[in-house]
Amino acid sequence: MTEVDLATSADRSATEWWRDAVVYQVYPRSFADSNGDGVGDIDGLREKLGYLELLGVDAIWLCPVTCSPMADHGYDVSDPRDIDPLFGDLAAFDALIADAHERGIRVTMDLVPNHTSDQHAWFLEALSAAPGGPARERYFFRDGRGASGAEPPNNWRSVFGGPAWTRITEPDGSPGQWYLHLFAPEQPDLNWGNREIFDDLARTLRFWLDRGVDGFRIDVAHGLAKPDGLADMEHPDKDPTLLGSAADDPRFDQDGVHEIHRNIRKVLDEYPGAVAVGEVWVDDGERFGRYVRHDELHLAFNFRLAQADFDTTDIREAIDHSIGAVDPVGATPTWTLSNHDVDREVTRYGDGQVGLDRARAMSLVELALPGVVFLYNGSELGLPNVDLPDEALRDPMWERSGHTERGRDGCRVPIPWEGTKAPYGFTSGPDGPWLPMPADWSGLTVEAQLEDLASTLTLYRTALELRRRRPEASGDGIEWFPAPPQCLAFRRSGGLFCVLNGTEHPVPPPPGRLLLSSAPLVDGKLAPNSAAWLV
Ligand code: GLC
Image 1 (cartoon, rainbow, N blue to C red):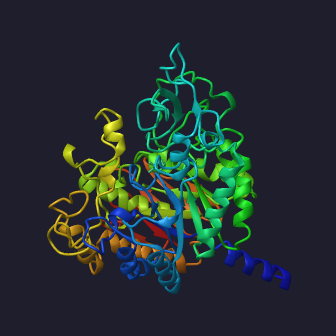
Image 2: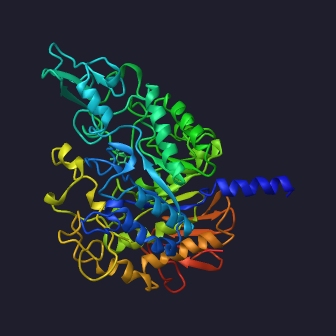
């Protein structure tokens, strides 16, 4: 290497620290409660940074902690430049960043630019302003259809169920215009055709970057641009789901969205090392890749793996798709098995011991891959989804769907830290945690797993350490090798071999030295529903 090459690669590793990072997603309501109100908070997270350092993650993605009436638990933001008192304050946030940085952990935060809360000053102003004025131009206010305007302006549906429009009462008391909300009525969509929206977002970006955050996760990054005219959908009956959108869905993936991302990128480029990862539910690989061109988002979530069954054809297809979508534009793939919007992997793969075995196996598959791994809090403990009673459900999806969709609370149950009884050290408050915790989680606590060599936590810690230290766990590509039916074998270009046995019987491992396996070998063979790393 010449001196110039060396300098370039050193710059690249400083500014592109995220290229093969493991990012830990903290759902703050459910992580750790420091003040006994039953809801997790920033100080609670700060107290647990030692745990995250021990686990070996490179960065945190913190779900929204900005001011919010909490209709969608923080994804309805009423002030994007302040911390909600439920979670703490700016001083607590600054202290979190300082402490995390001291431990070598970077902090990225959620940004919600597609919509605001209905309690945001802009929306309140729009409600009290006359139709047609600039205050309403920040959102999508339209007259209704039909003689008296009593029908919604178009046939779009909300992702949470029901129409995507709500009618307001005008300041003079008459039935008025309608406003668009792709999610809950408390989340009015912003009109990104209005330059003021971008200018305000740029202020928000700089506000947090100046405080030391290392980047953002951008909510609904594929939904910011809406088509001119807001024409009816051809298939409105196909209810949209989180994580999926059809190619002809006018609500998402409009071409105009890319200019918005280019403008966001220009601001981030003022802060070397700052990263943006977009939530992009776009199935088509070529269209997905457009979001991570060199002047747009650095990264985008690819949800294929989180949607794949424990089936080797599906898994391989998801891996090939994720790499194939970003490779042509020179971007980095991302991997995730779950997040706060989907069922936990243990449950998706079959629940009970089989589900856990498979989730452990998939953690080794995911961590062997090139690119960025997003790890949802609790995955490292092998937590399953929780079947909550109706009266405990808090997700707006439950009400909006007329009690047909149970929503996402089952994957948001608080983290069990220690002890043998609920709430397992999550909160010390008299009212208990905001979602009930199961009585049989004493074996799943951090305390119970920390020293146990066979635990899921130990498996994750070991895998993260090997991924960080072994030279074989490097390189941008993978190569598939022939494997028996319902098995997979691939080699990372640095040399690490990963094999997955998806069958119900033991399978001989390929030649090589075993580094780690998700289950003990059975007579020298890979156990059913297990994976291993070899060099
Ligand atoms: C994203 C978030 C989800 C939220 C929605 C609306 O999909 O991940 O939790 O409900 O956006 O903001």
